[in-house]
Image: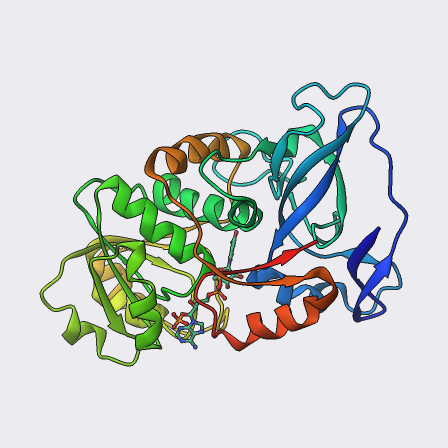
Length: 325
Ligand SMILES: NC(=O)c1ccc[n+]([C@@H]2O[C@H](COP(=O)([O-])OP(=O)(O)OC[C@H]3O[C@@H](n4cnc5c(N)ncnc54)[C@H](OP(=O)(O)O)[C@@H]3O)[C@@H](O)[C@H]2O)c1
């Protein structure tokens, strides 16, 4: 089978032997896979190891074979991959053996994936194959950040910078479905316009002075994933005593912030990452009920995955970039 790997520090499409499911494993014939920001950083983590690692965390397809002890899913069922491995219950933090699908565990940028039946779920009924292929990582991360960690309440105002992000686009839709007011930003006014269908209440351009632009708002919760470039500006618009959840740092991990202003403001800073299987089981009926779908940007064949990576790096996308096998 064809697979996109990192090996000896180089990304390449290779032919690799197909494996057979044993015990509670299933073999999923993948139809689509979704790109995530994480895929861009794999080179820094793996370096130039000689062992090939298959990239990709999100995917959807059909159960092709099942191991002799697998019983949750039938051959031919349409499924999605749960990229959050070994995290079953909604605990305060992931367990020690938590891993994400796609390096070092074999990923979804391949024609097939061998995985425990525990981390495969029936495709949400309202999603088509492409939407299902880009769904799980972003939606699950967003669900935990918004509900478990952010504890959003109906009627509260959420400020979430970076409308173009894969996770942010889910959070905006989920927060609106839950009855919150949502304000977002983008560096690109066209992106704001194209993203209006997510249903946000107010969008401002990143370059604006947020304190002035949002002087008439009371922000209860901020969800920050851009990092150093915007964290202090985000904190500046949060109401005193408000919550700020962070799950990403697309710009930089390290920056300074004013501790005195922070403790005087009695803010609450909360970290979040991915989500548990228990949360995924809450998320799927929630998105089905509210018809929440990912925004799709552009699709590429597996043979042209390098172009998909270049597109992801360009940050021109509005919504998720996907691969079809
Ligand atoms: N912890 C986890 O479990 C987890 C899971 C998923 C993602 N993440 C992390 O979360 C972050 C977002 O992920 P994603 O997949 O949603 O990323 P993405 O699709 O790459 O989106 C990044 C967003 O950040 C904004 N942005 C980027 N650079 C900026 C800058 N210099 N100034 C202002 N805005 C900027 C962009 O907004 P505009 O283009 O609209 O301005 C874009 O929408 C990444 O750091 C990713 O690694 C973490």
